[in-house]
Image (cartoon, rainbow, N blue to C red):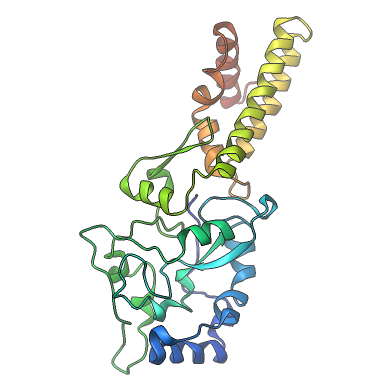
Length: 288
């Protein structure tokens, strides 16, 4: 999971269409009995979320569409009854709210379902905020409003939170939590499910195997120092490029690069560790 930027002041035109605005008015009247129009919250937003904001990746696990899990539009705050609080009717007034719509894979969406736990000190919003004219208060409905932030959700929001403060990626493909918010998010979306761990570990293992092969070729005098440095530079460049938000598991890429010794130096034998550490330092200095 990485933080993404969404302009809450400029929703897709479809959400502002007369038809979708009428659906919102119906939702305010019908509340939890409202049948939500997927055309408004999904069809009108999907392409913008996918291409412009989430880089064709799941907002929770960072899998792209090639991983076999279709991307879907999810309501960060569930539009129907909350799993942790059956007396809550769901955030029906946020069913068509731009700041409440997140792009996720079908697996994360299914895992999350209607879960939306809060910290014990959080105060859950139970009614739609209305203005003096009885219409929905748009500002109070935004995900970054004081009322909604005051709920203190135990689910990371990639549009609000800094996931790097809460989650740590490990060389074995697993994610470790730094905070209770990170721990709960990891549990809700099952971010250590087998297919994700394998996918992340494979990326690490493939880079490590390439590095080992080059170092072994150098050790056995199949290549010279200049060739080794050229090969390592190409590998390190690809590791650096994996940090790009457009790449799947780019947060893993951040850890691979910034924790390079943990991921790639530590597994090697002593002499090869020294060679690789020096090469990486030169790479960072632009001298490799």
